[in-house]
Length: 136
Image 1 (cartoon, rainbow, N blue to C red):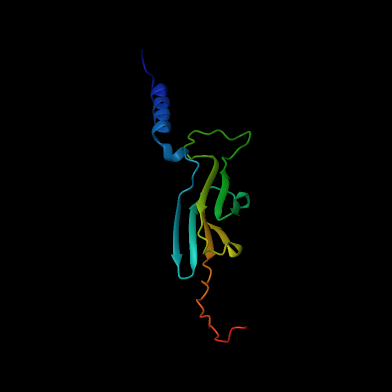
Image 2: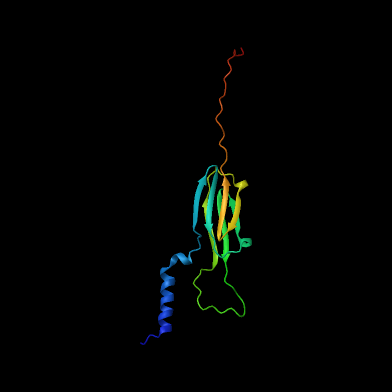
């Protein structure tokens, strides 16, 4: 069997798809960190329209959904198409100490940054016991 250069290129592409599982993953990469009284989550979402990002919090589970799309049109003819497309999602389990009612979301340079204030812990308080006579 004679392999042409086109066949070799196609085999290279198929091999890359099989072994490059990170490019086909539906999970977005993230960093999570705390600065003072705010918890931050940075999620990489390059090439995503910010208007199409869906963020929900349900029972302390934060879910982020988005979709990467390619340019489409009658005149668009791809020569190379390596960037992953399709739906992207990520779930994060949040602590009860976070105030998700005040969650702030910003999208800049392909990174979605979520900032969630840490709730002020209830200060311990001393309960005084009064002494008295028992009713007879």
